[in-house]
Figure 1: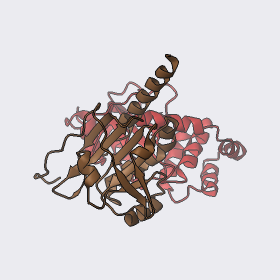
Figure 2: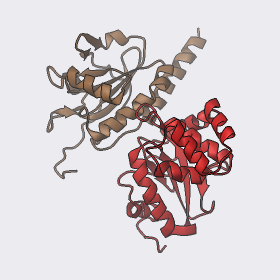
Figure 3: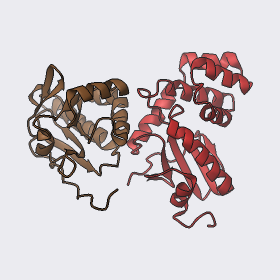
Figure 4: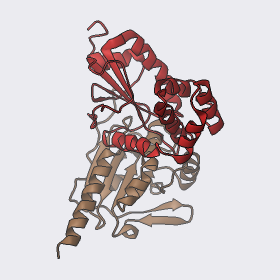
Length: 171
Length: 177
């Protein structure tokens, strides 16, 4: 890692409102935060399609997709690559969750989530778990070369799921 | 730093003395080429450390990326049921291009396993649940890809050549400790 690597930005903190977004997921469909109302959302920001660590990280989330869906979550990858790059990447890696193109204006969503690395013009390696009401439940920022794993996301989703269950029990 | 949440248990695939002063746990995938490289590094390390190191192998098949990884992990369990886990483990990593069903059967034959029983164990997927349990345990311990090593319970980030792993295990004191 180059010694000039800038410090990591801090992610938005739990309890704050999740910035709204609407990004292309394929050439003719888009996804917005409002579309996900009622379901927890996992956002996996990553620097670039096809780069080695991202692929490992996304392979892990891909493998764990059924587990996250069991907890009611919708999962999205986010990078500044175009939908065409995302399509090729998702096809090659057999990814089963949508990749959102934070492509134009470049990095707009990443900036809103404080997951923007200005020096390289890419997204940071950030993870967010949002509640079904659009509030940030958990966030984490990793150095670009460190694969954060998925244990934090699963812990957060399980916590939300337990909270929802206890709300249902109480009148 | 991530820590191993489940310490090695009695039914674990374990090499070396249980009370060895250092313990290396690997989460691996038989179809992963990096795990194939790591296999030789672990062998070197075991030679060097001898009875001072215990080694545990746990399954972490990334089945979406490696469609034969789960079946290979099940084959290793099926061999384990016949008392030959480590020999099958070695053969799987030494023959990563033969992990399709016929290749697995050939490996079982080379080990002179009871082939009917081996085939039945693969067909019934009786070990799949065990493989998935390793996988989820690994995820909760912060396993983020393959191979992931835990040196004395601490996740080892960085290169996995024998020398680096040795440093992680012995705290930089080398094999002389």
